[in-house]
Length: 223
Image (tube, rainbow, N blue to C red; front, side):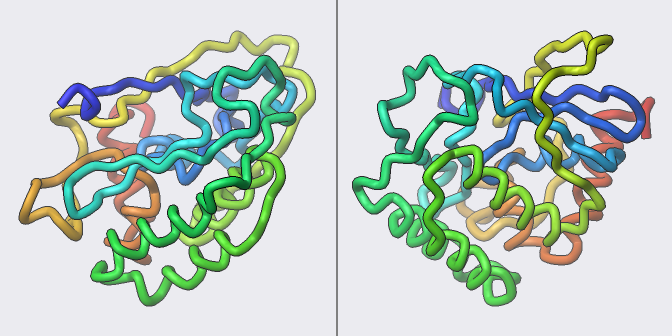
């Protein structure tokens, strides 16, 4: 059960009312996307060093046996000493087909799979050499589907007056997240803070309302 309470660090800091510093995630969590509700610009830094502990190549889903993770294989493995820009995807093992089949099997009975499933499948048919490009493409797709009015921008250097810090986001906390109906909820109950894919397939156009609700719940003084 320890995996249910594993903590990862993701860059998420408000610079001002409209701009937020992020790290590009592989179909990031609902909390990650809810943190962007009030922003018009999300900025990331390609030259920052790759941090394996931040799991930028991993996403969490709800499968028939409960919570599961998918990890993109990286050329040279996870212990890399390079900038995020230079992290390459390893194309051995046919990971794209495996990830897509896992998503298909997990969500084919969800209310909105017919609407969005083929779009996700199309993403997996594209080959991207670098993890940054893949994460950027999946994030652009997700923010468009949920309706976030947000520009995602690369920046070479942090703002001079920016005091950077890491905010810990829980992959799964025992309490504290609004509940929505999930595919295997009757078997295992509600599993919170999964990939935005889970929210999209289960809530469809109402995903944005959930993200707003979650943002208010997590930031009651700043909503």
